[in-house]
Length: 124
Length: 285
Image (cartoon, rainbow over all chains, first blue to last red; front, side, top):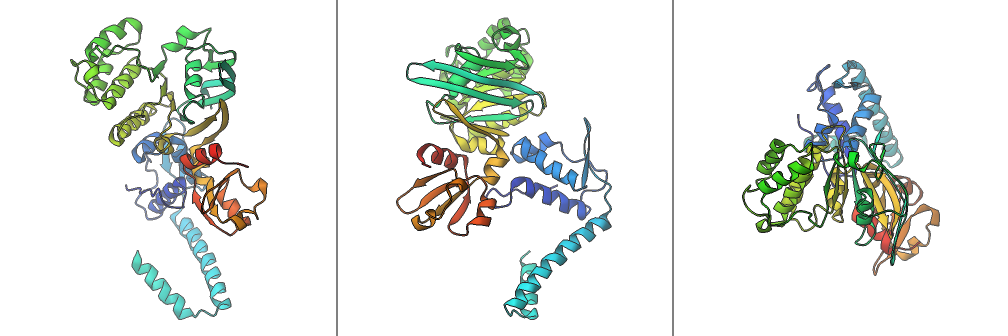
């Protein structure tokens, strides 16, 4: 499993870890029931503080992606992948909604937005 | 969360220096970095915790026990690295083990030599001939070999090159893999602590300025850089301190995102521990 932390990013480190683990769960690279590295070993291997990894895990737990069994470890929770996808889809929809609103107000055409999307996708 | 170390209202007065009501608590399993400029009181705090110097007043508890009344009991569970070496430089790592065996009931010779090997230290060479990095690693191996639960280190990385510093940070993170273990480490090399310390405690002129988690400090604090006219628009309660430079104002703010909601000028960078210290010490309100 790769987790890549940028120290110059504006995104907080715990957020970076959270998002990367989340995307691995959604893409099924991390499977339901799979054990995640312990908070301490992950902190050591990423060379970050324990509190930071703890923060990331706590948020993942709050959002239902993982569950922690005391004295055993943290596991990928049995959250329905469909539900997760649905949630992500909703998020995308909201953001597109904002984009469309801005575009309408500022007279930016649908084609312009489309070509922007194409460019952004290609950059990936 | 249980605390390994608790310092309450610690006071100590010297000629020309005073430690004023120092409060600290270090939870089990965590690393706390003690930062401050030279002479701010880091070493005095550490030495009071170890009861190497007598405090004037206040309370210090280690693993829930009083650090003076239960000194003997506590000491066997603390590993200490101080700036002034307490071991002769004419001893080899091998000699040190022979001596320490008599001091500590819990001295683990095997463990000690494992560290010596891991740190690539020659067993039969006197430490006088070691590089500063090697000397520090020897001190740390010695501090770890009696299997302490709390590691207290004063400036362990000062004077070391980046490679040696990194190796030492690795040792720290390895040590706290056990949730019962904790570390109090003072340093003025703040970048070392930026990554691995869970809590940062800032001491200035004998007083604690703050204790914050690493995430609060580095993800929330920000340094605004702006022009004088812009600076004048700021409400005093929206920033901590500022520093006027030749071409810009540097303003320390507690939460850069909150700040951005209210003001839209200037640039805000993530605050490094170094810049926080600098603006606190050199800045004005």
